[in-house]
Image (cartoon, rainbow, N blue to C red; front, side, top):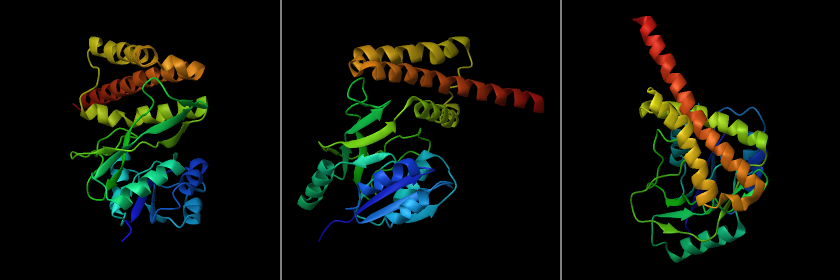
Length: 264
């Protein structure tokens, strides 16, 4: 008996990406799109591919992805973001794996990222493994995870060879907009973990030294410079993103502290 495969996707105004993604998984048995109030053509595109559509308020990346997974009915889950594409080679590998009887309940898939018009293969950006293929009822995301985290599974896992494509940041404007949004989305998590940079040494560590070390590690030690000018810009601005999220968490903590004092 063939194994049923479900693809859960969370989406919000993803019309620019979603058709490409859904076209790459027309071979699966079920597509579940969990939307959080799109105002573009996202839902129309989902209907074109006969997706099961659910609309829920956005409660964070972890709760959103878990909710989409819970709505799937297939025995196996192939979790995708709205800007990811399954290559024909990956499709063939997944189909052969499930037909032969998988040895593991969850599998890592390598991911090739398009960043600033360049397919990045260095600097820690590739193979960028993500736990995306798993038996339903096993892997899940933590509820307080950062944006675009991968599901977690404590059991034994396997690794696939064929990669998925991630149309991450096609140009600089998109990248900067995403980093601004993701850094803001990370603030509640950092506050819950006490990463508020309240002392001056912690502030300098998190907003300057940590980003600087991130750039040096990825650009030089992990050979990010081999991806040319695009690699330089990406790793430079990624280090700025690291600084942004800690600076925003510090500012949010300061506002909370001032609010508490005013109430007192």
